[in-house]
Image 1 (cartoon, rainbow, N blue to C red):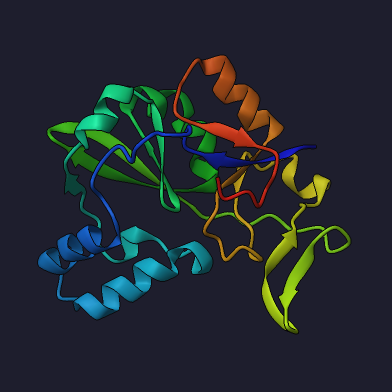
Image 2: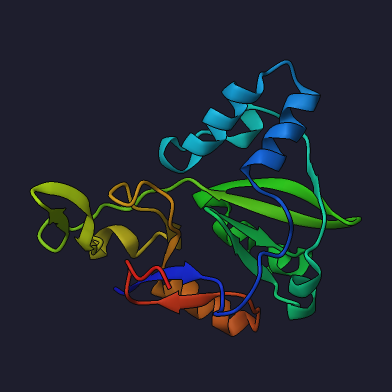
Length: 194
């Protein structure tokens, strides 16, 4: 089974101005947690799979980025999260919920859903190769997942990639295309940053 790296379409924008610092500030202003504690926990989310709800069970407030609003995408890759409009959430929410956590986002009065992916797929050790520069490890040269592990996982992450990239299987790609939703590109080069 094929795996794909989920990306924003070329030349597109983040949909909203929500990032680790703005999330941290909102959590800190609504809890007794310190900025340092929250930012560390949010930065560790991709790898340690903790829940945002463990820090705070509220919803995030943010603004749309005007250029992104014109794109009218249903889903946006936002760092190591996916941001879904209500129409995308209604169609995909139940299907992808087993693979992560949803958090409400209020963008200029419109309700969106932030998806925090929390499932890792097992990499194929025979097809994954580390890159070395002057004898020091420098990322991955190749990445592949075990077919039997990803066939039932619509969305997943890689521990070798630190959990920062979101991947999907062929079933999710078909689901997305058949839904006529917009906002995702599917790259079969699992390490291509562009």
